[in-house]
Image 1 (cartoon, rainbow, N blue to C red):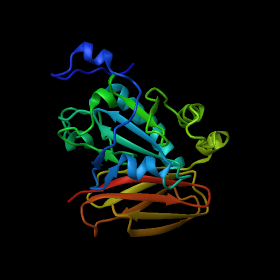
Image 2: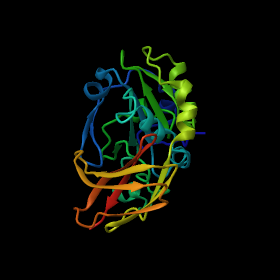
Image 3: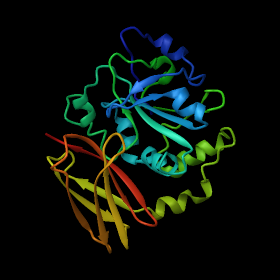
Length: 271
């Protein structure tokens, strides 16, 4: 069940009367890394499906969805580093949420929402998205938007696996886009995984590898996509140390890849 919410200006009658689906208004938002994202120009007009997760850091069902990693796996498989058929974004739907809440250290949060997430996270105040449209029935609402006419055609808030997300999107017959449903089982089962700790860190990270064999490349990119650190591992090395102490504080992307696997995680370097 969704975690329902009311604002001071929104009564129960208005909430109940809001449409679950309809045309998604355009937006232009800035994520935690300072990158801007325009719904129409950057995503839908490029023929890409938009998957906009509207959640709140204090919301239990939202946290369950986050911990399922379903949207992260959707992003990895079909986002810009996968088949490039869709874009996933997290939009914090409570305008009072702080950056500390997003990072898991605030007073209104269930944990670190950046952990394991490499798609954009947007936290703004005041909100530029209308919750009557984007989350009319509460949090979480995962809006799946068709590029041809900007229509919200699905809410996949209660689908906790990559396979379920893919099956729902393919079942909606969105502009003839097929996400490769026949291969998602093998994709999920065969993918390697990594665990990064501690994260955030003052510079030294440990990366626990699973499912990676042969020559494995570790690469760290800054928020504008420049490669700033790299290393190579031979064989099935269990733990690899990453020292980023010479880099400036901020958010980076750690990418671990070999011939059969590619996993990306966000890492945060503290002052």
